[in-house]
Image 1 (tube, one colour):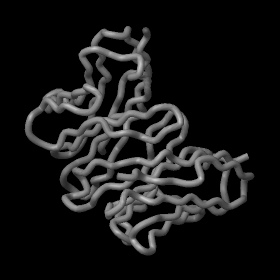
Image 2 (cartoon, one colour; image 1 turned 180 degrees about the vertical axis):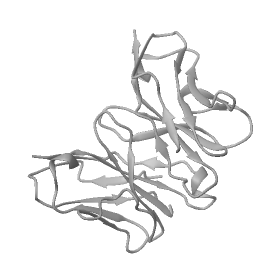
Image 3 (tube, chains in turn red, orange; image 1 turned 90 degrees about the vertical axis):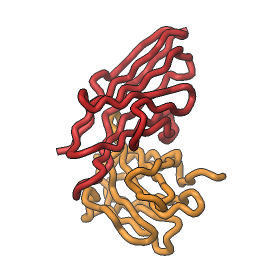
Length: 115
Length: 117
Protein backbone atom coordinates (compact mmCIF):
# COMPACT_ATOMS: atom_id res chain seq x y z
CA UNK A 1 0.00 0.00 0.00
CA UNK A 2 1.12 3.52 -0.71
CA UNK A 3 1.97 5.70 2.25
CA UNK A 4 3.80 8.85 3.24
CA UNK A 5 5.21 9.70 6.65
CA UNK A 6 6.19 12.99 8.19
CA UNK A 7 7.88 11.77 11.36
CA UNK A 8 7.90 15.11 13.16
CA UNK A 9 4.68 16.82 14.21
CA UNK A 10 6.57 19.99 15.12
CA UNK A 11 9.90 21.49 14.10
CA UNK A 12 11.30 24.62 15.70
CA UNK A 13 14.30 26.57 14.45
CA UNK A 14 15.79 29.98 15.06
CA UNK A 15 15.56 32.61 12.36
CA UNK A 16 18.59 32.50 10.12
CA UNK A 17 19.33 28.85 10.82
CA UNK A 18 18.87 26.09 8.26
CA UNK A 19 15.68 24.08 8.44
CA UNK A 20 14.73 20.54 7.43
CA UNK A 21 11.24 19.05 7.34
CA UNK A 22 11.35 15.29 6.82
CA UNK A 23 9.26 13.12 4.53
CA UNK A 24 9.54 9.42 3.72
CA UNK A 25 7.31 7.44 1.40
CA UNK A 26 6.33 4.01 0.17
CA UNK A 27 4.95 3.43 -3.32
CA UNK A 28 5.04 0.72 -5.93
CA UNK A 29 7.37 1.84 -8.67
CA UNK A 30 8.65 5.35 -9.13
CA UNK A 31 7.06 8.24 -7.23
CA UNK A 32 5.87 11.71 -7.98
CA UNK A 33 6.56 13.79 -4.84
CA UNK A 34 5.12 17.14 -3.79
CA UNK A 35 5.50 19.67 -0.98
CA UNK A 36 2.76 22.14 -0.04
CA UNK A 37 2.54 24.79 2.67
CA UNK A 38 -0.56 25.89 4.52
CA UNK A 39 -0.84 29.18 6.37
CA UNK A 40 -3.58 29.65 8.99
CA UNK A 41 -7.09 29.89 7.52
CA UNK A 42 -5.77 29.60 4.01
CA UNK A 43 -5.63 26.90 1.38
CA UNK A 44 -2.59 24.88 0.44
CA UNK A 45 0.12 26.52 -1.63
CA UNK A 46 2.45 24.57 -3.89
CA UNK A 47 6.18 24.72 -3.05
CA UNK A 48 7.89 22.19 -5.31
CA UNK A 49 7.70 18.76 -6.87
CA UNK A 50 9.89 15.91 -8.09
CA UNK A 51 8.79 14.15 -11.25
CA UNK A 52 12.01 12.95 -12.84
CA UNK A 53 15.58 14.08 -13.49
CA UNK A 54 17.81 15.98 -11.07
CA UNK A 55 17.36 14.74 -7.52
CA UNK A 56 17.68 18.26 -6.10
CA UNK A 57 14.54 20.27 -6.74
CA UNK A 58 14.32 24.01 -6.15
CA UNK A 59 11.01 25.64 -5.41
CA UNK A 60 9.24 28.73 -4.17
CA UNK A 61 10.41 31.04 -1.34
CA UNK A 62 13.96 29.60 -1.33
CA UNK A 63 12.90 26.05 -0.46
CA UNK A 64 14.47 22.96 -1.97
CA UNK A 65 14.10 19.23 -1.55
CA UNK A 66 16.27 16.24 -2.38
CA UNK A 67 14.85 13.02 -3.74
CA UNK A 68 16.72 10.04 -2.27
CA UNK A 69 15.53 6.83 -3.88
CA UNK A 70 17.58 4.45 -1.71
CA UNK A 71 16.24 6.02 1.48
CA UNK A 72 12.79 6.67 0.00
CA UNK A 73 12.93 10.22 1.31
CA UNK A 74 12.10 13.69 0.04
CA UNK A 75 13.14 16.09 2.81
CA UNK A 76 12.33 19.78 2.50
CA UNK A 77 15.14 22.21 3.25
CA UNK A 78 15.94 25.89 3.40
CA UNK A 79 19.40 27.33 4.12
CA UNK A 80 18.19 30.26 6.23
CA UNK A 81 14.77 30.25 7.91
CA UNK A 82 12.51 33.29 8.15
CA UNK A 83 9.85 33.96 10.78
CA UNK A 84 7.37 34.16 7.91
CA UNK A 85 8.13 30.51 7.06
CA UNK A 86 6.18 29.47 10.17
CA UNK A 87 3.32 27.34 8.80
CA UNK A 88 2.08 23.80 8.30
CA UNK A 89 3.96 21.78 5.67
CA UNK A 90 2.55 18.77 3.84
CA UNK A 91 4.37 16.14 1.81
CA UNK A 92 2.39 14.14 -0.77
CA UNK A 93 3.25 11.20 -3.01
CA UNK A 94 1.69 9.51 -5.99
CA UNK A 95 2.75 6.38 -7.89
CA UNK A 96 3.46 7.07 -11.56
CA UNK A 97 2.14 3.71 -12.73
CA UNK A 98 -0.34 1.06 -11.76
CA UNK A 99 -3.99 1.15 -10.89
CA UNK A 100 -3.73 3.24 -7.72
CA UNK A 101 -2.48 6.72 -8.56
CA UNK A 102 -4.27 8.57 -5.81
CA UNK A 103 -2.25 11.40 -4.24
CA UNK A 104 -1.45 10.35 -0.67
CA UNK A 105 -0.87 13.13 1.87
CA UNK A 106 1.18 13.16 5.05
CA UNK A 107 -0.28 14.43 8.32
CA UNK A 108 1.72 17.62 8.16
CA UNK A 109 4.60 19.15 10.10
CA UNK A 110 4.17 22.41 11.94
CA UNK A 111 7.22 24.62 11.48
CA UNK A 112 7.92 27.37 13.99
CA UNK A 113 10.67 29.88 13.32
CA UNK A 114 11.68 31.92 16.34
CA UNK A 115 12.98 35.48 15.93
CA UNK B 1 -4.54 34.92 -13.38
CA UNK B 2 -7.37 34.42 -10.91
CA UNK B 3 -7.00 31.53 -8.49
CA UNK B 4 -9.46 28.89 -7.43
CA UNK B 5 -12.57 30.47 -5.92
CA UNK B 6 -14.69 28.86 -3.25
CA UNK B 7 -17.81 29.90 -1.40
CA UNK B 8 -18.94 30.22 1.25
CA UNK B 9 -15.82 30.58 3.39
CA UNK B 10 -17.58 29.55 6.56
CA UNK B 11 -20.76 27.63 7.29
CA UNK B 12 -22.41 26.54 10.51
CA UNK B 13 -25.31 24.10 10.36
CA UNK B 14 -27.06 21.66 12.62
CA UNK B 15 -26.79 17.92 12.14
CA UNK B 16 -29.22 16.42 9.65
CA UNK B 17 -29.35 19.69 7.71
CA UNK B 18 -28.02 19.95 4.17
CA UNK B 19 -25.24 22.18 2.87
CA UNK B 20 -23.66 22.95 -0.49
CA UNK B 21 -20.25 24.28 -1.41
CA UNK B 22 -19.27 25.89 -4.68
CA UNK B 23 -15.94 25.91 -6.50
CA UNK B 24 -14.77 27.76 -9.61
CA UNK B 25 -11.40 26.45 -10.81
CA UNK B 26 -8.66 28.34 -12.57
CA UNK B 27 -9.81 29.19 -16.09
CA UNK B 28 -9.07 26.42 -18.54
CA UNK B 29 -8.24 23.80 -15.92
CA UNK B 30 -9.76 20.47 -16.88
CA UNK B 31 -9.12 18.60 -13.64
CA UNK B 32 -10.95 19.49 -10.43
CA UNK B 33 -10.61 17.95 -6.98
CA UNK B 34 -12.63 18.12 -3.78
CA UNK B 35 -10.81 17.32 -0.54
CA UNK B 36 -11.91 17.05 3.07
CA UNK B 37 -9.36 18.20 5.67
CA UNK B 38 -10.12 17.38 9.27
CA UNK B 39 -8.20 19.34 11.89
CA UNK B 40 -4.78 17.84 12.45
CA UNK B 41 -4.86 15.68 9.33
CA UNK B 42 -3.79 15.91 5.74
CA UNK B 43 -6.31 16.40 2.95
CA UNK B 44 -8.42 13.41 1.97
CA UNK B 45 -9.57 13.18 -1.63
CA UNK B 46 -13.34 12.97 -1.96
CA UNK B 47 -13.74 13.19 -5.72
CA UNK B 48 -11.73 14.00 -8.84
CA UNK B 49 -13.28 15.25 -12.09
CA UNK B 50 -11.68 15.35 -15.52
CA UNK B 51 -13.82 17.88 -17.40
CA UNK B 52 -17.33 16.74 -16.42
CA UNK B 53 -16.45 13.08 -15.91
CA UNK B 54 -15.57 11.42 -12.59
CA UNK B 55 -12.05 9.95 -12.39
CA UNK B 56 -12.09 8.85 -8.75
CA UNK B 57 -14.85 8.97 -6.15
CA UNK B 58 -13.81 5.92 -4.17
CA UNK B 59 -13.60 7.85 -0.89
CA UNK B 60 -16.80 9.85 -1.30
CA UNK B 61 -19.48 8.77 1.22
CA UNK B 62 -22.13 8.43 -1.42
CA UNK B 63 -24.99 7.90 0.99
CA UNK B 64 -24.73 11.54 2.03
CA UNK B 65 -22.24 13.33 -0.22
CA UNK B 66 -22.74 14.22 -3.86
CA UNK B 67 -20.80 16.33 -6.32
CA UNK B 68 -21.34 17.52 -9.85
CA UNK B 69 -19.50 19.43 -12.53
CA UNK B 70 -22.15 19.56 -15.21
CA UNK B 71 -20.51 21.88 -17.73
CA UNK B 72 -16.93 20.92 -16.96
CA UNK B 73 -16.17 24.24 -15.28
CA UNK B 74 -17.46 25.03 -11.79
CA UNK B 75 -18.51 22.37 -9.34
CA UNK B 76 -20.82 21.88 -6.38
CA UNK B 77 -20.32 19.53 -3.43
CA UNK B 78 -23.38 18.74 -1.33
CA UNK B 79 -23.84 17.03 2.02
CA UNK B 80 -27.30 15.76 2.91
CA UNK B 81 -27.86 15.07 5.76
CA UNK B 82 -24.82 16.36 7.62
CA UNK B 83 -23.30 14.56 10.59
CA UNK B 84 -21.14 15.91 13.39
CA UNK B 85 -18.08 14.16 11.92
CA UNK B 86 -18.44 16.15 8.70
CA UNK B 87 -17.03 19.19 10.50
CA UNK B 88 -13.92 19.96 8.48
CA UNK B 89 -12.44 22.26 5.87
CA UNK B 90 -13.52 21.42 2.34
CA UNK B 91 -10.85 22.26 -0.19
CA UNK B 92 -11.23 22.55 -3.92
CA UNK B 93 -8.22 22.28 -6.20
CA UNK B 94 -7.66 22.32 -9.93
CA UNK B 95 -4.92 21.41 -12.39
CA UNK B 96 -4.57 21.95 -16.09
CA UNK B 97 -5.27 18.35 -17.06
CA UNK B 98 -3.33 18.71 -20.28
CA UNK B 99 -0.15 16.72 -19.80
CA UNK B 100 -0.76 13.80 -17.53
CA UNK B 101 -2.74 14.78 -14.49
CA UNK B 102 -0.57 12.67 -12.20
CA UNK B 103 2.39 15.01 -12.63
CA UNK B 104 0.52 18.25 -12.45
CA UNK B 105 0.57 20.79 -9.70
CA UNK B 106 -2.74 21.21 -7.95
CA UNK B 107 -3.79 24.77 -7.13
CA UNK B 108 -6.01 25.11 -4.10
CA UNK B 109 -8.76 27.49 -3.15
CA UNK B 110 -9.04 29.02 0.34
CA UNK B 111 -11.45 26.31 1.51
CA UNK B 112 -14.84 26.28 3.20
CA UNK B 113 -14.79 25.72 6.95
CA UNK B 114 -17.87 23.69 7.98
CA UNK B 115 -19.03 23.29 11.54
CA UNK B 116 -21.84 20.84 12.23
CA UNK B 117 -23.54 21.29 15.62
